[in-house]
Image 1 (cartoon, rainbow, N blue to C red):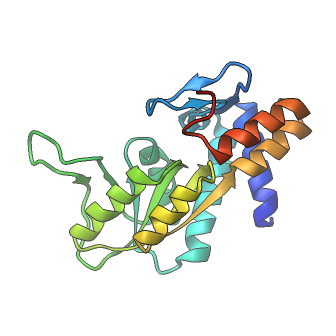
Image 2: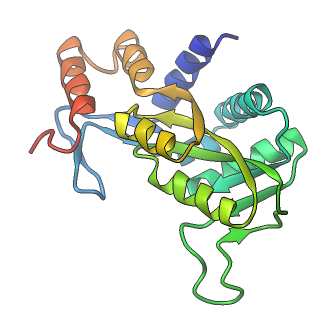
Length: 212
């Protein structure tokens, strides 16, 4: 299967199980305050075995293709924990996960699970918007002495700020599917009309001020 075909298949599955919802006429409100015609919750894919398996296989294949030297998988809390554990199990590799910040009680851990200095780690994330949570996790792993090779996620909105943020930290990332592919599939399967497609494309170019 080519990367383009995989991206189309994943986008189609996300739409079918409503992990991604498109509502250009009645936008969602994100926690950031942005108005958005799209809402993505990839946790829903875990409830559908065929979709869950396809995504697990895609993520695992990406890890093997781009970083065959990987020694441990790390999930980004919270949505990347389940996906990361599935990938680690499939690849027969150790697993850990990274909290947004250290716990305020007990051992005060930010990284849950054992990770050794110099160990080569790949992060698993469910969604890339600006890349902030992923990069915080990568920084925590680096501070613990790990060698962070890169990150694989299910889906990306394709914001240029994410590419810039990852580039600034010297971290490569790949996603199984992306916003442009999703829109193509949404039109093909008649989830949205051609006029709604224009609105969805406009949002991606200026999400912070769209709909204000």
